[in-house]
Length: 325
DNA sequence: AAAACGAGCAACCGCAGAACA
DNA sequence: GTGTTCTGCGGTTGCTCGTTT
Image 1 (tube, rainbow, N blue to C red):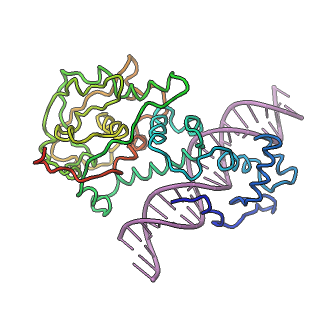
Image 2: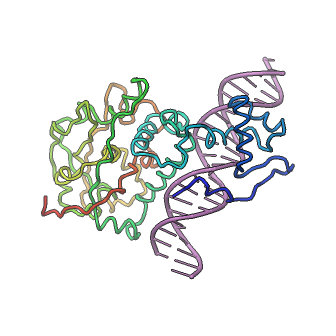
Image 3: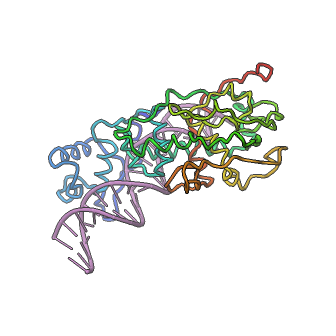
């Protein structure tokens, strides 16, 4: 959709009140000057560009232009791949909004790219969850509903070191203590996502009780999620992506409902009694935030959306009718 | 056909910490 | 030790254009 030339004329060039500092979109000539400066002196001394009279741009502006658009090997105009998306989602969960840090894991991507990607994703997800049921676009999807496909191959990121990066996502899903077979789990009427109307299955299914089997517990090679939150028929027909699985994991978190504090209880359907499994407690003292360890993302409405999978509604196909189950 | 909406993106701003004088 | 400048980061703004109504 976007092509790199789209913004060349989108607002007038602006000067500050002294008439000296130029703002706004860059011209090719300015880029050229900037590139020449970097060739000579390297990517530094940005302020000297202006002091030498080469450009009427602040050092900040010059640096930003270089870092975000002129640096070699940037993936300008290239959409985030599924793998890149997965990495961002995983690292955001681990690091929080440390875009520059996250970008270091994504060759050719800048912190601005990551930030914009995340921002777009947030808006999309917020809309998905907050759109009233009468809204047209989502409603079409809801009535059509819904098999969530696997995202393309979601392997562990190829981090240069296999230290902290490896641990987090795995620990979110894989814990022998996460599912205690002795613990009976009741189905929870989950707002929106798990709304029976949304998934177009018999609401009674939501009231089924069952005990998760060992087969659903994570193995070492592939993160899985607690299928217990899905009605058994859906467990067999809904192969969720990594991200979707993560969401559903979150839906089990007792704090989850707090994130919907404004929601009318009546929206929760007829099953009033809610019994949720405990959040993951991987190691002692690590039960505060679902095993994420240290990060600056306590569970809040926002952080809930943070973890909503980008592809949740991207690949929707008609669900087989319940009689096909 | 036109208006409204939303996605995607570039570039700005303020702030904080590092480096320098 | 202090003040100033530079650099980098995260948040935000506002623009264009495609899509939907």
